[in-house]
Image (cartoon, rainbow, N blue to C red):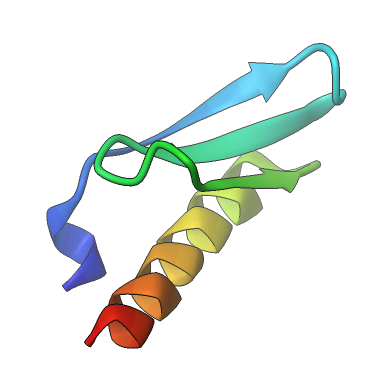
Length: 54
């Protein structure tokens, strides 16, 4: 189910890391030094939240 959402990864100059974001869950984010890991991290976090909401 988490694959049905809009994700993006941006660079945070303040944190000096990439930030994974999800448009449908604006309060969630995932920081990582790797762009790919930030993307995977936010997808995993959203999947966990969806499971908790069930």
